[in-house]
Length: 154
Ligand SMILES: [Zn+2]
Image 1 (tube, rainbow, N blue to C red):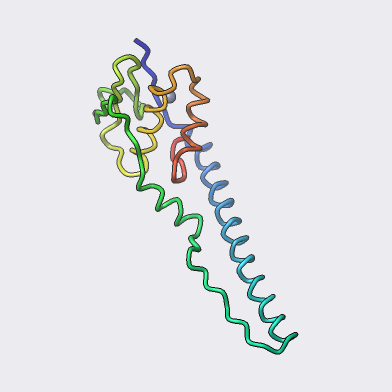
Image 2: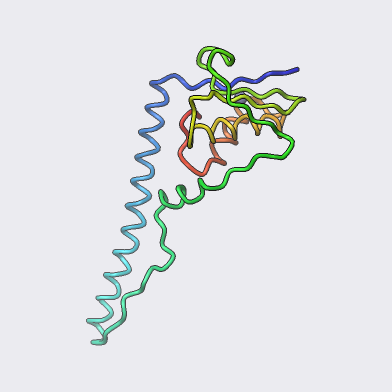
């Protein structure tokens, strides 16, 4: 039986990636804000030009990217044939966050993890079970892409 373990990336590398993610999120928010401001300026310009009152558009379904991720985080899926167990560090071993037992479809997740971190490790291990032919780095990339929030360990 093949056992796959997920270990966190080295602290320094992780910190750099978090900073990059934050920079990207800020840039994205700024771009959206700029777009809204730009529309507002165009409207005022047209009002002056044609001497009419144009009602300001209302952005009913505008959701900021960070809010979108937060909303999407409510959805996480576990196939019915996969069993999830939360186990102490002593069982998993030092620096191991989770592991998947291919064949029995059992997943162990460190019992100190909760919220996003728990969901992230769960997604990773379930991906190993659902896609046993994928390499560790393919699983990592796939999991990072699928997460509805910023990855903590990928
Ligand atoms: Zn793995």
